[in-house]
Length: 489
Ligand code: C5P
Image (cartoon, rainbow, N blue to C red; front, side, top):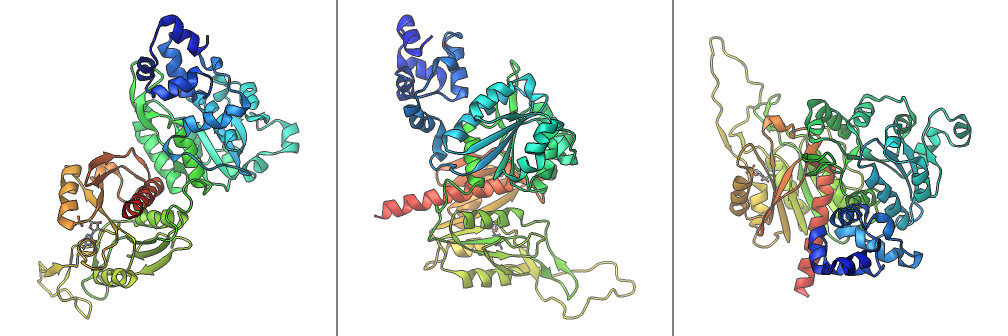
């Protein structure tokens, strides 16, 4: 039944219906008059709210309205297109496969080519026929389809993709990928891929929280795979709620776009972004030093993200195993004093991100020769003195302060409270706070769960790959800079 008929018949007001399905009255009005098409998620909510009287099939959109409907579902990251880009979608078996159908449509609306591989389990939830109808391509299902191996083998499927999206990425699919298994078309294609891979995990919260899944996710991220989500929310199983719900389609589309270098490109063009990263090593003598466990992953990812968004980037890095990000001017230092000098030398900058874990202390007088143990010596007393605070110095610089200064706070308890105080004490604009207590595995790991603390308060971000934190942060910074520029006009 048409939504307009249902609203008329039941006498439901558009504003009440909008509230019930969690959208705006304007959207309801567009849906009602056939001027927009709901995302699959919204269609579900409509179906729920109307007791199944109005379903996704009741929203047939004319071709000329396709643009309108795309806008409807793009969310805040909308815009841009995938013209000439080829997306390979690998669908795992899970109830969220229905959402992946909507993803096919959204990618096509943006001009992308989409090929789809369904695992055997995926075919329990959606059919290859519905997939190929949406994708307007054959849906691939079997590694041993010899005819297709002749026409287009799994190597070609992998190689012709600009990006591979695995959605829903089930616990089992992730485990196979982490182990490098290649026992069906989906996993063989993933193993043969050299395109970026984006996973949208979807599973029961207990499965997501299990140590084996944590290990697999971490290993995959270490292999360069990106994750979007999962989100916190209601599960398909009734009464289940938690972390494990697949990211929403607009979020996945935005992440695909990021990887394809589409939307947001140029957000930081014309700006100089200065990033510190990694630990510092403070020498005690020519062979020994005081240091910490920072890997530099987050800082390097930020420098790379800023570069992708068009900024000129200077990265001042302490000793790390991370490769220099391409296109970024990377200056290598060892000590906090050297880092301070390199940072000052790189000014002026528009944005400074202090992600380095600078040692608070250095030896007051490092020995020039290797320190020797004296016979009978049981203790050693070192005299340490404070290192310069680079973040505070930048934030409080009366003449050369970057317009946006961002610090990091690694805390092991009361994360938001401590970080809020730190923001004030240092005088920076934003603090990105994370819990690095040992059970989180953040230190040296690939994922990060952060709180963004600004003058307006604290915002918790869901757990995501450090590369995604970097991208999201630099986009936020880009938008902030545009707002500052507009306000100054
Ligand atoms: O004071 P604390 O080390 O907790 O503050 C962390 C933040 O300050 C990080 O952004 C770090 O890069 C920065 N910092 C710095 N110079 C220091 C100490 C910390 O830039 N000497």
